Image 1: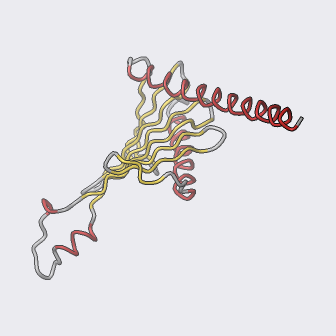
Image 2: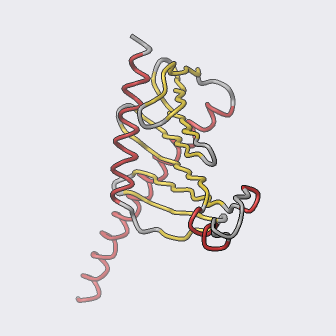
Image 3: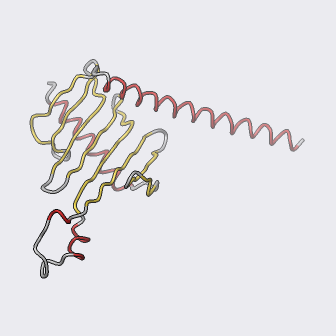
Length: 177
């Protein structure tokens, strides 16, 4: 009889696993659908005329007046950061965040200013991409050099990105009034 109990428990676990897989596929389909709309030029692009508080240059991509993608880039003298946020109603489905900044510490270690004249051609850059997909829980990847270097959720970064996404959405909504 014990094997029968195990069988019932296994079926219950399998059912939960199938339901989670279906939710994942549904969300991925929505992201894929938005990508398809974007890639086929079906989304309407709108520019936020002011500099976004947390995003820099800001664009919204709409499907039938519903915001589907928030796209921003904040440029600095030697680097930049960018955010691409996929939306479905008030829900954030996916965030791609990229940081491309000079590695000042490495440069100064190798070329101390007391000994060398500053040479920007010798500067190295960090190019880090953070990708988070929101399902029932967050899936998080930190990538550098096209390799996943961490899947541990950086909750401080996620809170900052989500808050910024909400703020940029509000900024974009202000141009549609």
